[in-house]
Image 1 (cartoon, helix red, strand yellow):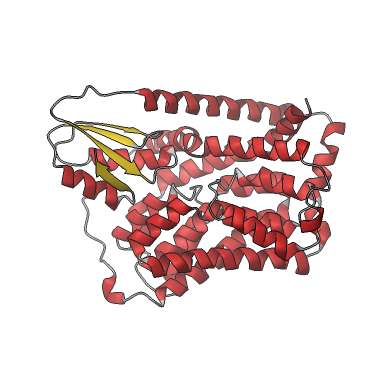
Image 2 (tube, helix red, strand yellow):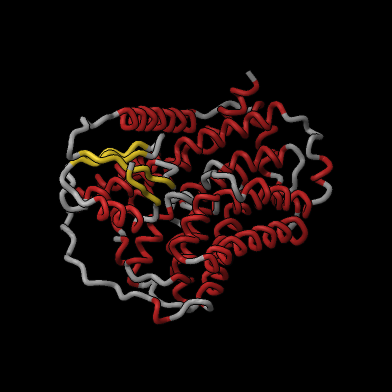
Length: 407
């Protein structure tokens, strides 16, 4: 019963802000063309890195979902410096996670989080830019004008992206984050982290060891961070988890290494680690501790006040969206194409969410001769129907940032 109460509290606190974030994210996706962004990111200096970071901070993309976007920007003319800055900034934050951070951890966390992402990403981008040869930058190719979409059509696209595609992309990780946080809150003894709580730097290093290989979205990491604070870990350690957990995982590091080189990938990883530790120490040693007590106070007081109908309604809507996304993804993964002489199967690696699957699906569908595509997220198998050249499929998927091999 206590587990359900803890889940309900965190869900009610986050759901209104998450729904608002989904809406804003959909509007940004529908009304801001991706190729327009890439045209402004061709330089290797600090200006291109700042632009990329400013674009990436509000975008609600996870560390795997951001890879196809960043690689597409890179191949469309963005420099390694700008691409690295975008890769560091984007998964750490997002309009949805910033709003949810405010609701659950308070305004100071909500402000420091995007500021840290901005500074860290610019520093990482500038560092990569110093190793980048200007001659290696590709020019943005002239493209045919995209099909004009009416204002109403853009609004529909915004709603579809925000409340369908994006929910399907991060929904499962949000649920996992909430469940893990509730389990920590209810079942972990209050003095479990007392030793680490007295040594902030040691606890931050431990958090990095756990967070760097772990996959968790920016929003899903929030309740976990709050629960760890409730169990005695410092706010700075919680912030390290908020930064490092969403920003990097082994899959993203491998793909970045292949696409932009080992040196760029190493700078990318070191920038995230250095930024997380720096801002974690700033929070613990230079900021007043009372600024970070809002999460504990709110959690301890939640049982003594009635729950408003508005957050309950938002929670109900969010639950329905999550259920619909689960059913939709389950149906897609169980779909099959009748295999014949024109059907070929490929093993795709690097997909972690529906956003990745959609990117692979679009890339293969654009190959000449392909008539039908089915990409199964659970086993990574892409079934392609039509008289096509397998080499073209492999090149298209690799261009999107994923590994592929024929079966």
